[in-house]
Image: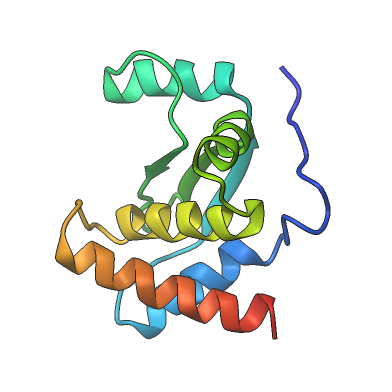
Length: 131
């Protein structure tokens, strides 16, 4: 199915690059990352195939190695739904999801270290995106 594009003001193609740069500044060795904006059907298939989980999720991250870039899948359907459910600004929630994905790409699981890295990446991205 086709990719759905966010409103131009909500997605800046540099956001992923800013996030990965911030992670590197924080000492996390990240190589190149491919970010794919997908719909719920696409991410649900990937979630089932690679994670063994049923249904869509907001973001999936697959670390790369020396020969392959890391891959980030972000569901725009879920992003939009979560923004409505939680009353969050689309651009702010997008930054949260990108930071969370970068945390996983850097090898972190959920916890204090990942939260600290996510906060760092998000603050760096906010400074660059809204400066």
